[in-house]
Length: 131
Picture 1 (cartoon, one colour):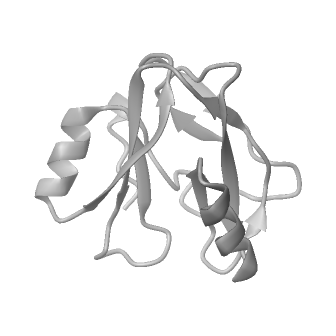
Picture 2 (picture 1 turned 30 degrees about the vertical axis):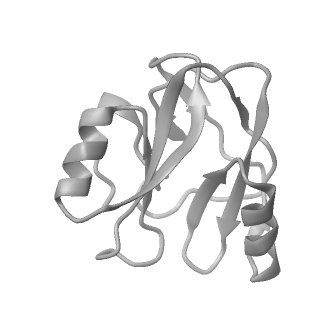
Picture 3 (picture 1 turned 120 degrees about the horizontal axis):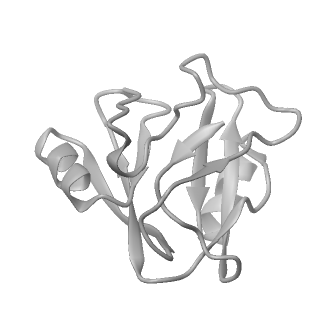
């Protein structure tokens, strides 16, 4: 299970989950174009685990030093700013949550969490740094 700290809305724009079987990375996107582009190069589509909506931005960052599997999503602006100051690339608002909070995204049936305990990303004030 992936641990996150935001409260997702019950309805709104789809947030797609895709999986790279070569790297073990899961990626969340509201862009059907990004999802479809990744599917064309071998990623697996895993569905819509939740929706985007509300007023709390969830930021997407990428760690260019870590290479493949180095995305992180956070609803915490301080975490975002700290990571950017340490060399992470800010990729923009990934989606919007109702509020900061806590929930769990279940693993998609038929997939296995990566060896790092399923922590392919950390959100909010969890303090977990998977990379």
